[in-house]
Image 1 (cartoon, rainbow, N blue to C red):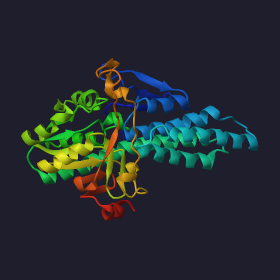
Image 2: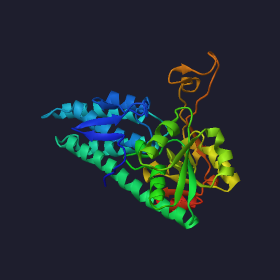
Image 3: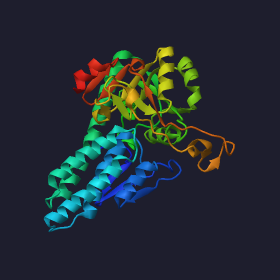
Image 4: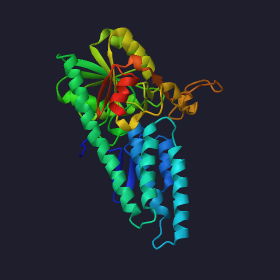
Amino acid sequence: MQSNTVKAVDWKNDQLVLLDQRVLPKSEVYIICHTISEVIDSIKTMVVRGAPAIGIVAAYGVVISARTHHKYDMSLEQKEEYKSVVLADLNLLAEARPTAVNLMWAVDKMKQCFLNTYQDDSTIAGLLALAKKIHEDDIANNHQMGDLASQLMARASSNPFSVMTHCNAGSLATGGYGTALGAIRSAWKNNLIDCVYADETRPWLQGARLTAWELAQEGIPVCLNADGAAAWLLSNKNIKWIIVGADRVAANGDVANKIGTYSLAVLAKFHGVKMMVVAPTSTVDMALKTGSEIEIEMRTTQELTQIEGMQVAPIGVDAINPVFDVTPATLIDAIVTEKGVVESPNTQKMLTLFG
């Protein structure tokens, strides 16, 4: 399924092309990754971000690594050396960012394909076909989740209402269409919503720079707000749902997402606003019993003390920068995946759907 929304990740002219999300919306700059080191750097430095998009980029990264080291008519000894070198690249790739499980999921799928084919000269073609399938499946899954989320919202209210979202879980964070923004796009198409409130999302301002830009591009009414204004908005505006994506979902339904999601869920519970998480099954990690087992990435303090290189805090003041938090399943009304919807998630409901 093709997506007519913006492309953050593309395989074009046999090259990996990434939209540099660090400079949006001021500039629309595309970067071509020629090496596995450039792929890893693009993930670490936030050229590409969003769990599904990171997974897709990782899949194409495996193709680049395998292609870089491949030689035709290799001896058996050379093939074993080839395997070792590529697997070393894959290990580095899997460690690029620790919280989003889609990265490891994609690398594992690609690794299995490589191990099955590395002795065959068709291995590059096979890896590329799988990477493209991961990409295409993500877009199709996003549309499916958007439909399921829209149906869920339609059952809850027949009158137009507003929604709030946090960070960016749209086309820029996925293969296309989006998870949380896919749900919002589908709801807008079905005349369910009248306004989207977008948290600015400090410290990287993904809501201000990316979500507002995506929605404005498509003419969907969007209103930007400071993260700290959420409680006032929930008590004064016709907001019925908070809709977010996820970077990892544990077996009991706990959800890791951009820092600030947990506090939004607490506010939503107090104000009687429903909390929806939209994420593909590749984000569900049934190996983790609860969210307490999810590793939370800590990034540089400069992301807090500076904005676009400008110092906004006193020099020498300490800062802490966890970039994700974990929202307990008890605060979540629905987890929407392409396989189905888990309402009021718990371990048994998660097991029923995901096994």
